[in-house]
Structures are given as C-alpha cells and as structure tokens.
Image (tube, rainbow, N blue to C red):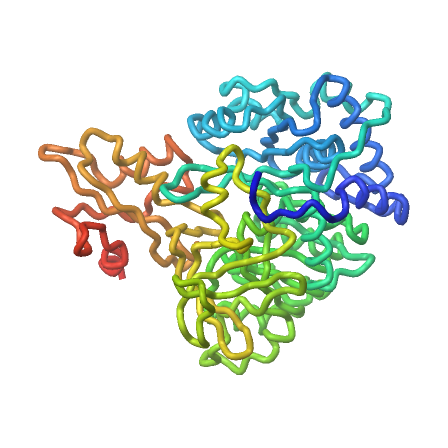
Length: 506
C-alpha cells in the first residue's frame, strides 16, 4: 500500500493487554440481553482464538471475513485477527449474494467467522466459515494459548469496503497504527473517562462502530452492544447499564424522542451523545439539545480517515443561539492531531465562505485501497487525502459540508452508492438509461430515488425497479421514488444534471 497510513503507533494487542492488566474484572463487552465478558476473559478469549488461527495456518497479512449480527463474533474476529497481524473484513449482514461474492473474490479471505445467518452467503461465495456456537467454534475458544509473534504497526487490521469513483467497491485498509491513533484521539476529543460505559446500536460492520471495538481498549471502557436497534431496547439498555456515552444516527434519535416511553430522566446517566453518519436537520439538532440531558457531539469523517477528524463539541452545541445561528449544522473544527484544509482545485486553501474540497492529513488515514495502487495514488496529493467532499470554512475554522462530490446517499446512517444501483437497473432489458440520486426524507435523512428512461415498448414499473435493486443489492438501496422520463436534463457535455432531477421531487 502506498497511502498515508504511518508505521508508528501502538499495537492493538498492546491496548488489550494494558486494559486487561489495569481492569481485569471490569466488564469489557455486554451484549444486551445476552453474553457478557470481562477484560481478563476477553484477553484470554482473543489469545486462544489467535493461537487456533495460527495453528490452522492463518498468517500475518491474511484476511478473515466476519458476517454476523451485533455480538461477540465481531470482537472475536477483530481482536484475534489483529493479534496475529491479519486483517478482519466485515461483510454487511443482508448483503445480496453477488455483492458478497464480489468482496470475497477481491479480498480472498483465509476463513470467516459468522453467526448462522451470516454463514450462508459466505459459504455460497466459497469461504470456509466457522459458525458461532458450533463445535468448531467452541474448539477454537478452548485452544491453549500459545506464543504468537506480535504484529507490526503497519499491518492492516481492518479492511472495510466502501465505494470509489464509478461505484466499484474498494477495500479501505486501516493499519494497527491508524486504529490505535484513532482510539487515542477519540478518547481525548470525546473526553472518555476510566469508567466509561459506551452503547453501540449501529451495525458493527460500519466504520464508526467497528473502530469503537478498539477505542474501548484505550481506558478499559465497558462496551454495551444492541443486537439490533429499537427505541424501547435502546432506552432500556441506557437505564439498566448506566450508559455514559453513545452514538446514534438521526433516524434512531428521532424514533427515540418520539417513543411513548421516552423521558429525559431515563437517559440522565448519559454524559455525551454523538450523532452523525447522516445529515441532521437543524430543527432536530435544537430538539436534541432541548430534550437530551447530556452534551452533544458530531463531526466529519469517512472510512478512509478511520472515523471523524473534526468535532462540533458539547461546548459548541451549548453556544448555539437558535435556528438562525450560522454554525448550526457545522461539523466543527479539526480534532487535535488531524490537519483538515478545504482547498480550491489548484490546491490552495479557500477563504472563509468559499466552497472547496476537504483534504486531510492525519496518522489515522488509511494505508490505501486493497489491491488497487492506482486508486490509492489518486486518493492522495502530497500526503493529503482528497476526500471528494465539498465544504466551506469560516474565519474560526468551523467547517460546514455543502455537498458530496462522490454523490453518496446516506440513508439512516448507511451509505448507498448511486453508481452501484444504476448498474443494477441499467442491466434490465427495458431500461435505456438511469440516474440515481438522493432526496430528503423526514425519517431517514435521505433516500435513494431513480429517474429511468425506458426502451420503446418497455413495461417495467416503479415497484419492479425497487424490487430489482432489493434482490440484487439489498432493500436499503432500493429507490423509494421512481420517475420515468423521456430524457434527462444535461450539461453542455451531455452529463446528466442530477440536481435538476432532485428538484422534481421537491
């Protein structure tokens, strides 16, 4: 890999060992309504799995896929892989078979850890799967710990698939050094304490939740995990486990505040609510400030930066003067240790209020894209990551996103890539041309919409378009609105003007 991810930094196994030494009987992972393990147990569990993997021939640099609902499987895969210098590759649950097969063919995992539901798609793609609760999985956990060589800081510990230009999935490689740097920076920026109890209610295959598996080690925090989100379950977990900090996407927050059982007293233990991964309406931010008895925090980041690199802090939220405050909706200023510069196309920094591209230089930036040196080289300029996201910055360094040049649709915290959806729809024989874009939605923040130009005599209807995408990709990616057009608004060079299509739905 030729990216900016550095080789200096602490190792993930060192963080786990330090946590287990400092707080052996503190609960490390609590699966709401299920299993719980202490730090001593988590460290032993990781060592046993790492020994079993090494004995079975998994080596430093190999890949281990993981596909499961939120639970201990993700902790097992992420931490054991990191112990031997291998990389965990999370595969989203519910992903359509062809997309699973695409990731498997690209990354060639040595084996996979999965729950029963996740095993099916991985086996269909030809992966050797060890299923949670099976005799083989139990044998792995019973393996006597052995001496396993320590990894290197530059070893890739996570490969998380996202989409590059044109929508082709690319594996973002995050090194041990990048992940441990992110842990230290996040702990400092969000002021995590020694007895932090953190709740994850988003899928552990997402970057922010996956990174939290490692961040919890820096300070031996307790990590509470919801298998799946629902408002009642979230409120119960906060109350019962005395949660002090958490992250939620706007859709989840709206459902929590609208729930009949919500009362601020039920979340009185919360110190900090981190929100993001999708646009939040200004009215919702103000509502959150009014109804949650805790500080609020949001920032800007992406998979390639191992999470957020800017922060709009609790103090910033308290300073907001109301709905007309120009900083309402800002993603804040750079976190300590991260350089964030908004630039013009010529590479010079913009002046306050001018739109430019966000560029990032940080020790927690990715090493590169798996197996794609050309894409990696194109993502960097002079050691700066070119994010493709557009923003303005004010005189005091507060950044505000104004657009996504990569056209990612973020729906309920999940990234949906128009080019992937377009390829599926365009493959239908009735379709001449298609454009997919995001449109605002009161519940999800954004949802995908499609404009379709049919071939003469085509009979495809809106419901069929949606189901076509659900079957080929997943139900989250299906267009919620389908327009049938005779032609598209275009630029002088013939490119479709998606912003004009979006206005048709306003």
